[in-house]
Amino acid sequence: MRQLPSSRRQAMSSSFHPSVQQRAHAGDVLKECLISFSRDTPQGRIIADWCTSSKVEAASSVEVRSGQMACALASWGAGAGVAIVDDLTARAYRSDELDFRPIVGNPSLGIFALTHGASHLRCLASGGSNWLPLR
Image 1 (cartoon, rainbow, N blue to C red):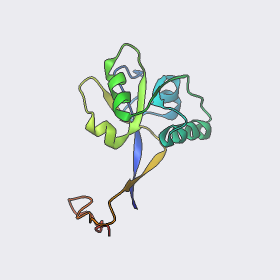
Image 2: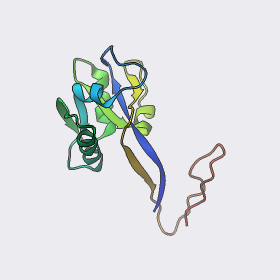
Image 3: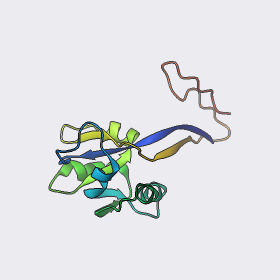
Image 4: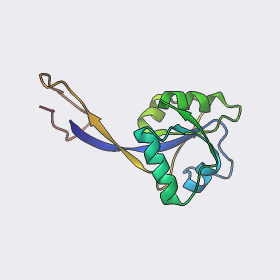
């Protein structure tokens, strides 16, 4: 197992508060109803710790078990809330119904590549990446 660059959390919503500009701030995001991971998941613990370190308590929360579900609920509208997901999930779920904003001072989540011991990962990234194959 080898750690890859950290993935940053993103805020996505179909009804983001109009006072928020291009980048969302913790105070603005955490005032909204959150669509987030439960505290018994690694992502949920990171978000809970982020709330504590930001000294802002989340107004309320809808718990999900996957980033895709969080994005689906946010895109549904109807006041479901703001989804906090990693940027890989956010980029994969791009939609005209969602507003994609990086969160200022956001927490990060380590990303790991897992491979079978007998196989080799030839390339982790393209476009000038300096990552070496895993062995």
